[in-house]
Image (spheres, rainbow over the protein chains, first blue to last red):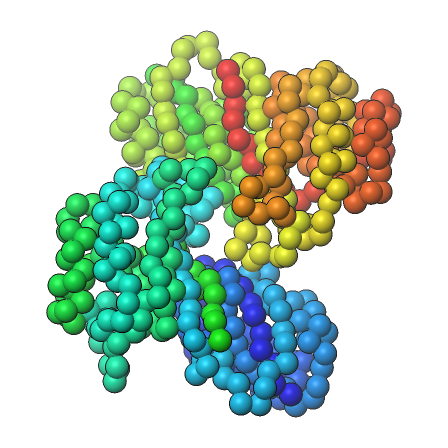
Length: 246
Length: 246
């Protein structure tokens, strides 16, 4: 029986999503529990994509197959009762035989949270503590240059080898927290994202917000297809995989 | 030289505020750093009050004395550069010789955060995960019975021996999160709080919100001065010392 699972996690205490031999990972924890549920037979989960160490997920999706049929509600309960408290299964539904949680992705949404105000120990693992003011209007202008179909090679991991670096950002926007002027969230809806792409874009946006670059610089950076033209990779703790659309 | 310090902390990884011989505590961490700054001479900090294990603070206050005079700005920087990242000094000012951070407290504000919606791993250490709906209107009614001067013996730790259990709650209110109907914050401004008082009050309020008790029951519970009449002590992670007023 094939299932599609929606789950959230706090990535703070994990070496990322993808299973590794000697490190605690989200995939590793979930597969360990699924193996117990599946009468001690190994189960592989196929997620919409990986997330890096320290990155969180609000609605990650993964499919997997079990040897026996268990009701979705029972399966959800069993998983949540055995998973650590920083991983939570929100929903499980039956999936069609030909469904694939990665190949069938239509779009994904990532959000990145920044605190421009005073350092806050309570949110240190959940909001990037930039702790200085940024020119938010100039950053918003820059976001407009990112929307649309572009080659994002300049914004991916330097040594990432891909056949195709063209992706479409359907929407890129910046939201101010109505209750706190120092809190902003940058969100990206796109057809796909390259490794480190969101964190490299946000690192560049921060340099624009600092006045070190202009919003139009985005055009040249995209054109260059050169990682060295873009800004620094910003910290993982502000990043959340928010939604996956099929 | 005498100083008054305002600081915030994430209580998740501490056995409470107060120093203990073999446990990691907020006071222990701060005094360890102050000793280094004070040329290896012991420094005692006197806080507005203790907080229990897992409880957070947004604006805790403490006074202390150093053998030498250091500028407040330098002292703040030195402390923050050496303290762990879950404790943060927000402000240091010079204090008068006769000032005492505990004895001079005029009022304190505590807040308690509850999530009535789905379990959220991201906020598991910062918002109490009740994860079921509560009758918020009945809870608001109950809060009105708590305001004013009362003997709060029924709401303190069962074995707590005090000369005086009379305290004044200046304001008790419930706030709904405008962006999420399932999130509520209960806040209490009072002249003083007994040990476990806020958590025992919130535990009772939750039973009222569950329909197991009526809001008017608060009157009888207060009158009884009997801990067994009140509700359970609710989890520490939803509780924050928000402000201390002098």
